[in-house]
Image 1 (cartoon, one colour):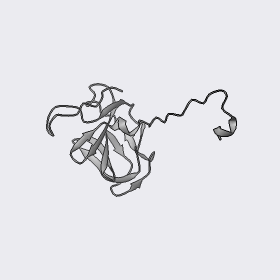
Image 2 (cartoon, one colour):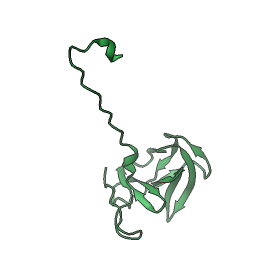
Image 3 (cartoon, helix red, strand yellow):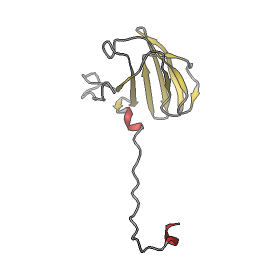
Image 4 (cartoon, one colour):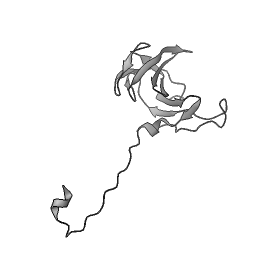
Length: 132
């Protein structure tokens, strides 16, 4: 990871509204979850793909889109490739991945965190029939 999430204190304030992941130009970019492509195009020379997942939206840039607006996608669907456009991460290439719920920016890495489930520690004398 090149840069972590640093939410702005106000909607137009300073901060970093996503995470920057090291990524070489031409590398495939995949949808983080099931949803529908809500934007696929270019803004100021940078390719951008946005996917609406119910109440949240993920964004990816700079990406050369391989999907069209309105297309449904499943988690893991290839949505494009990283553009050869340094700038957002200085001279390095990266993929900026964002997540929003309405006007609230969220950490997209929260989509990857799994829940921990604790199991009891069974005493050695516990009959195996109780473990099934």
